[in-house]
Image (cartoon, rainbow, N blue to C red; front, side, top):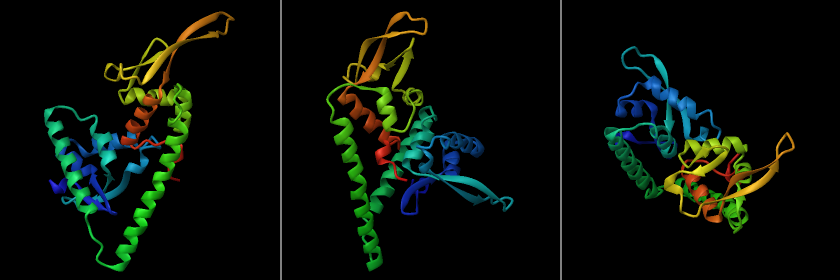
Length: 235
């Protein structure tokens, strides 16, 4: 199981070649899937390009290393009972490798200093999250999707498509609504609003707004996919 996940640059990762071999897929198809994910700026940090040597011809070919989040996004499209078993094996392998890293004790002074610096960096990273929570999630009122999208660096259309692709919402007519699994949880509120169309005719349309609970759900869900608000994005 450990060979599914390796340590690279002090991070538990797996490779596109290993994923292709484990799930019985063509490596070129896995690379194509990763290429699609790399088009989104919010997922690019999950993948690092590398190379491997083909044992049959001795030539060098491209591959990608990915962390847990990158693997999760990639494997979302792999379906079936057998694929599920492999996903569970990967989860166990990531957990085991990350536990080993967590309990490594530095043996030299430079290692100890590096560990201390890493911990300080982790603490500093938490501060933007607190800022976002305090400033954006503490408001008990309703919030529009367009405002939340702006906080994440998306246009409203891009953000709606993102949430649709992640299985959170679907479009009915001109109104976005939550899928059944997220309904009745108090995440959103649909209310009518009036507007005047291009012909000067007054119309009424429903719009979905996010409650404080819904905004907290979005934050946690998107963070699990490696998507962070701009205030938490590193340069």
